[in-house]
Image (cartoon, rainbow, N blue to C red):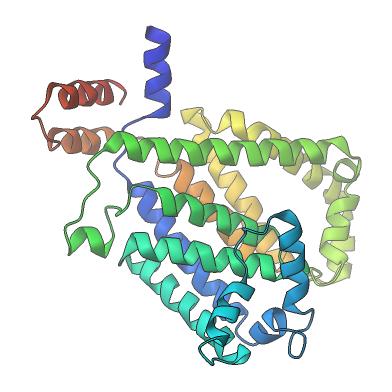
Length: 326
């Protein structure tokens, strides 16, 4: 009985939902950065046989092999072509749609439909991009998926403030955050374990290659060479940080230090390798999952629970369990 109660409290901790506000705002900025960074090369990346650099149909064919039900840009372009819209005009419409959706997410207006539409278009772009897509696209898809299924609207959104739409169950907010936390822990643990299995991260050769191979050679190569003696230590530190992250981040006295270290690592990747989108999405996911820490949340959750409806014995019992889990 006690074990079941502890499991319930772990999976359904009461939460105020501030993490969801941070996730929404961060993903809105991520989408805006994504479309603005690609504005000049949009048609080259996603164009068809006549206009595309790698041809969109290559990415679509790779996606179909995985599953014919995964969204891809060919669906939207084919649908718009039936209305007489050219491919270039359709791609421009998709670009502007993503820009507008990023703005809606940023300000928290029409949160649910905006999150669903953004997830669909972003996933379609990531899959149709084919060989030009990388980890940042996949992680943005993951973040948008959690936002799409989360109990919106969040506390800082326009939907909540102006339209007075509320999410009344703090336990449901806590469950979605817990799922994101566990997902991040799995990503870091297995990513770090994979790094530990090879010798490249222990002797620094993988970091050397990462910093000197185009297009990631942002730093002058003589700078990297002059600091070559630090590369093995940096590689070992990255391996240990990623493997230990799923364990240390749950310990409250070390949580801030672990978050600072992991965010500093991704900030360094963004600056030294030019992987701004990857660094940004990882920092957003980490801070949404584990920051703000639980300090000071108890009072807000207790206040939210007191405002819940008290008209049934079942609701009262559930609220009591949630309050005990704070």
